[in-house]
Image (cartoon, rainbow, N blue to C red; front, side, top):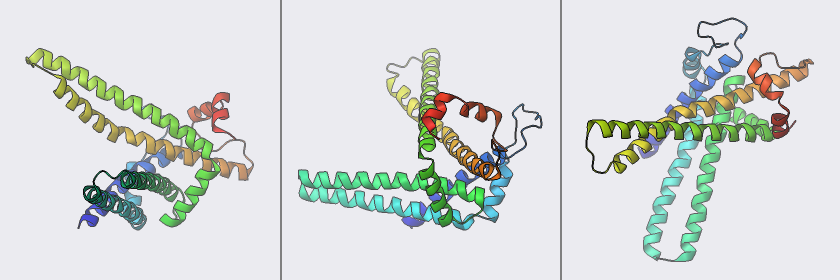
Length: 258
């Protein structure tokens, strides 16, 4: 039942992520020359994301979430065994070192599976292939364009950290002002710390959409560039104007490589 709970949780996370991915894909490939009421060129279709999830990719999302839930289960079992062994052997330095190293390896493997699953879902939405084929092809795509993925991932991490810290800090400041006005709190530090942590966690959930969208648009651009190169075109057909301007910057191109 514990494994079933992990699988259901991972599956719901995968479905939510896939809807965001399809929304970013529909925006990238939409016609951006038509003026919109919101003033933003292009349209992102959430309904398509839900339809593709239910109609075409339920099994693939279940497969990816199954692998991730297995990693979670292995991690929890290892942590339980590590705590038991630690209580049995006491302060044995060698045992602590071994379990710490194994724990770091499992943590790295967990992060790798999460990253691979996310990129596999993107390739799956772009190509319509199954999960295993998409995972292999997306991994090859990452290896071929490792500099671009590292650059975009680094920029996304910096932006997300600043956004989350700004949201949490402003929430804490407004809470401090509110407490100073409506009540006489003897020591506001603990409530402010709790507010900061809760605001940071909520901001992390919403800002994570940006990370998924940035990786999706990068894969769309790379595949669009491959199609344009094979067709003999100078530029991809669907690249947004802002993205085209960004890639024309010499400093950006030097960081991202050829």
